[in-house]
Amino acid sequence: MSFVSSGVAPATLIPGTVDISVFPRTTSIINTTSGQIIQWVYISFQLDRLSSKGQLRHAGAFGWVARLRLALFVRGVRDVTNVYHIVQFQSGDAYAFFHGCHWKCSYCVRTLGLWDLGLPEDVRNELDKLWLQGRVKFLSIEEVVAILKESGVRLAFFGGGEPTIDRELKPLIKRLKEEGIDVWLITNGELLDEELVGMVRGITFSIKALDDGLHRRITGRSNRTVLENFKRFVGSGKVVAETVYVKGLVECDEVLRIARFIASLNPETTFRIDPLVQNPPYEEVDSCIKEVMKILPRTYRIMATKGEPPNLLYPRIG
Ligand code: SF4
Image 1: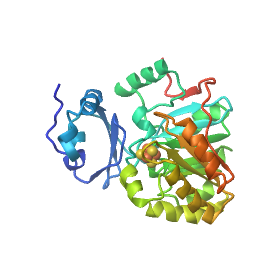
Image 2 (image 1 turned 90 degrees about the vertical axis):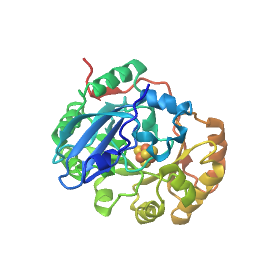
Image 3 (image 1 turned 30 degrees about the vertical axis):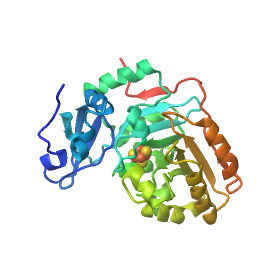
Image 4 (image 1 turned 45 degrees about the vertical axis):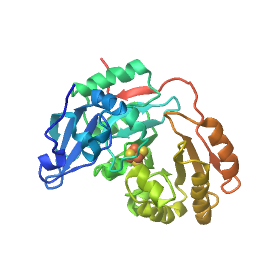
């Protein structure tokens, strides 16, 4: 099956646009002049399979353009957020998913799909269909507020994707605060500023690697600004540090380097080590945590439990 396109990247098809997404099935393009966002859907599944068989291995930097793209719609961004999916946990807290990221981490959880992985597979499949039919929209600020209010949410986690690339993030947090709803930000930390830190209840601040070369390999970007921002904001009392333990990439020696960096700033910082979702090396992570705790006593990992799935608040099925 051949989906080979003209070989021209979207950013050059549309003058004045920047490709900002890493997701395999979708990408957003911002027109830097008008502020419009153009939503594209990739029909990429077959190509991903081809790629995994090595047939596209030599496509190099242009391999990704060999995907059939369908323009879905164009939207202005005035009060439309990047939020496309919201779930509510049994605790009553919610998680809002922001679309897109300016990084391209090799192990990004969104490469596994757009939806909360705690949802049953058949539900995620239904949501995939809605997405491909163009029946999932980006919510306005007032729509997000209404959905969370209706469900009695008091704390909303903002993740994704990367929430800080959304220009409506601060107005959204402000409106939610007016309604008594707090926000906890999950971020790569690169675009944080004082105002944003001041607005949220807490921040899960991800440090992918301390070694800059390794960081570039994982994310495609330097960690210089990330580490500067971590130094700036770790004293706010709101920051939980996080990293992802990836076998063969970010193992205990690198995690210990990150831990020493954090401890040099504040040894009381909470540090979360996430085993890679795709293939969690739990035993290695647990033995690593024992070592890390000698440096940062407040180190832990999330426990994978097979509890009740979250409630789907948006998009609705049926
Ligand atoms: S920073 Fe987070 S959302 Fe962005 S590509 Fe990396 S893992 Fe994915």
